Length: 474
Ligand SMILES: Cc1cc2nc3c(=O)[nH]c(=O)nc-3n(C[C@H](O)[C@H](O)[C@H](O)COP(=O)(O)OP(=O)(O)OC[C@H]3O[C@@H](n4cnc5c(N)ncnc54)[C@H](O)[C@@H]3O)c2cc1C
Image 1 (tube, helix red, strand yellow):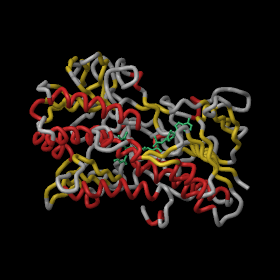
Image 2 (image 1 turned 30 degrees about the vertical axis):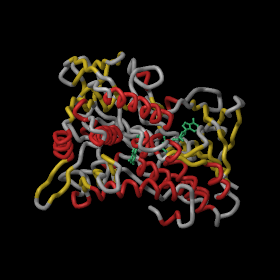
Image 3 (image 1 turned 120 degrees about the horizontal axis):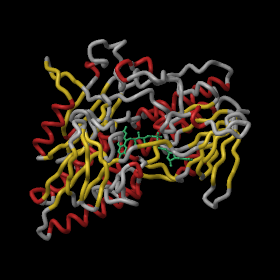
Image 4 (image 1 turned 120 degrees about the vertical axis):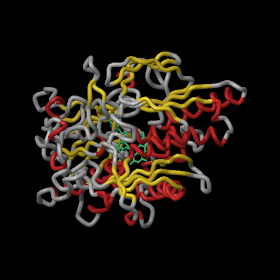
């Protein structure tokens, strides 16, 4: 009997657990255990609507335990703090403070990001002055601060709103982009938009980069870009933008930045939502002699190394350098998926301010990428259980990216940008001109996208609760 331990129950870990349990049910007495710090699954994309007070956080969540009971998956509510890859066990800290050793034959690390607000003084909702929509409590707090601002605007005040990224190396620009559009449209609906200046602040090298090096798509015989799309939209919405920027610090009502040209700037704000940089969850890797081998197993940000080509400069990185099987090169029974795996480098052009401050988005591993990598990893584990070589691949240079960016959530007046790219990571070896197949790249704004976005919310929550027919939903 093989013991599989999955650490984390987000898009990567939870989906891997469902796919693994389903695949193993016909293959004998193997055991899957999920260890998750939070007892609920959160459909994070809908936190954008929570942050603008149009949805309650509970509507984005469900309890994991009943789903795991149904799928015959063991569940431990706890936080993994150590992995011992020689002795093949993890240490989980339980909610009551006790530590539990959990043995494994195979482990899949799917712990997502640690939100590193501390990298920018004054950033974040807990010890700083800015809001976040990255977790249910953060999005709920952002909504209540936003509604406070709305009250002031209703009394006749004017205000400044800044939305974007809070560090030169932050990622997840797409979420911030959705949020700024939703805030704009909500203020229009409330008749308050003329009282507010809204600004997009980001580390992107160009507008519409979104941390994926932007995208090109065909419109008849024309090629248009995400930069054109974002520029036209921000012009229409009267949103100013300040890009190529790192946030040095935030004080009450003031943001201090430096940009790639070395210009130091200050921006006043009454309400700001800035995405923090990500690093890995703090997990120690310890060998059989008690040595800390975290640096050997992980990149400097703590993300677990897998089968990527690490160490190449940005200019030389290409499709084949991206990981395919999500297997650690040192311990072959260790896998990592979703945001937890170490990418070989950024997708977007990195840069530096004249004083050396790095400015450029780190690569996103979106929900769909997280699911695909989690699925490949668990199926590879099952290959190994059956004595075969891992055969499942889901390279970001061979898989599509799908993002439906909500701009306004409404059945009749709603709007969303539907963005599909193939592949996510440019692959010049395969597509020499653009690195992507432009026949499969789409960027369109409209009401249909808004319906699709709402549909995705319900479809994912249905699928991930393993309800009847869940396997039919891609
Ligand atoms: C506001 C917002 C909107 C977004 N919108 C989209 C979108 O529209 N489309 C899209 O594709 N992507 C979107 N994303 C990105 C998407 O949410 C992430 O790519 C995805 O959540 C990554 O999945 P993951 O499984 O790697 O990590 P997560 O979803 O973060 O899951 C990690 C899990 O591990 C648990 N965990 C962490 N540490 C430990 C530990 N030590 N022990 C045990 N458990 C642990 C966490 O509690 C969590 O449950 C959005 C992100 C944000 C913030």
